[in-house]
Image (tube, rainbow, N blue to C red; front, side):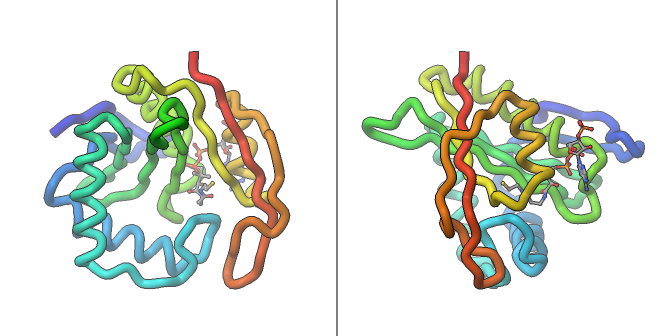
Length: 182
Ligand SMILES: CC(C)(COP(=O)(O)OP(=O)(O)OC[C@H]1O[C@@H](n2cnc3c(N)ncnc32)[C@H](O)[C@@H]1OP(=O)(O)O)[C@@H](O)C(=O)NCCC(=O)NCCS
């Protein structure tokens, strides 16, 4: 098990931040379906993910991590998965660019997990993926909490795609952000 952090959150919950491994598919499946149902600012908006598909996703993710094309970290509180974040590398002429994503389970937001996890993902990415030069992300224009967090991490806005992203079956504007990695 590759642990990158073990300690307490702001409210005293004991958490572990670690790389994914075989066997995590069940918790990941439960987590992503719960998040999808919430229809929050994430890619899944109510659709149900099949266990078989989650299993395939995990095995391709493990391969990507092995090949240093992804950093993905999971946060566990006891046996429960409560947050996921990562940077996934693009390819070919964009080999130096990685795409960032993050989510924290509803009942675990606002206690420092998101910021801590992001810090660890960037630390690991700098260590493990030397070709990483630029991190990009897309965020709902309305997601002011996430936008503020990203700005705090040094992300800068470089565009807005009108109606670029769906939320609960309506089109919303997407803000594009980037950060240079030194
Ligand atoms: C955005 C998200 C990842 C942040 O993670 P988190 O664990 O809740 O954030 P943290 O507790 O580390 O807080 C980060 C900052 O946001 C602020 N914040 C968090 N929740 C907040 C809230 N409900 N209202 C106002 N500010 C809030 C914190 O005060 C903190 O700022 P500070 O360092 O200046 O005090 C999380 O809320 C989430 O998963 N939301 C739903 C999905 C999502 O939006 N993902 C991002 C997609 S682009």
